[in-house]
Image (cartoon, rainbow, N blue to C red):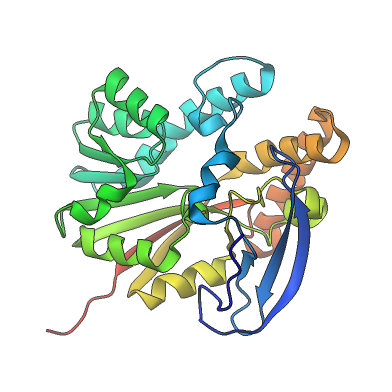
Length: 298
């Protein structure tokens, strides 16, 4: 295990215990979340070393890398995913009608393939071999391993996306630096993240599937992702909720809480979370952040 002595966001050394959470999904090991006393950033600490992280993903039920339609929850997941592709395309095309897009953590490539069919130039980064090969062999996409990021041409992309990926990346600050280098000055960055300040996170607490330790190394709120991006001269210009996520995360959380699929409870709690966010504070279960580079004086 690796113990972090400094906050990954602000660099300070003072933390407080936040939550102790079991890996309900796979290993059943227990992990500690801490909160920085200075910037309030929450992160998993200690955490598995980078070379040991892969074993926590080795399950056929890890949906982002699974292509098997088995079980109602997977069928529902895939149906929502297909609808979400349409919504994601509309969101991005409101700001860029065409161009070149880089999807970091592209998994099996469905998102990139959708854009490829719409005439975009596409490229993906995927660390895991099997989903990377699936994207290449089934869709003919240009997908590279993670270590290739530093070899890509600077200022070459109009849009860079990370859909529930940044929370998995061991070298958080380095990743944003890489993106700042690769993105065109008039391009934009899109990051989708779970939000631990959501109603469903507060309701399920240590059973909340959005924590997903130890695969999720960081646990963002709107303020901490904004602070991270400002460090690297990005400003958030739009925020959009991912309303389906509250239902999906609540469904998994029900399973972790009671060892069975509580579909009715998950639906009610997902709905409560979305209503609470809409009425009160926009703290949805998952949030999409769109950010642009700051314009600097020459």
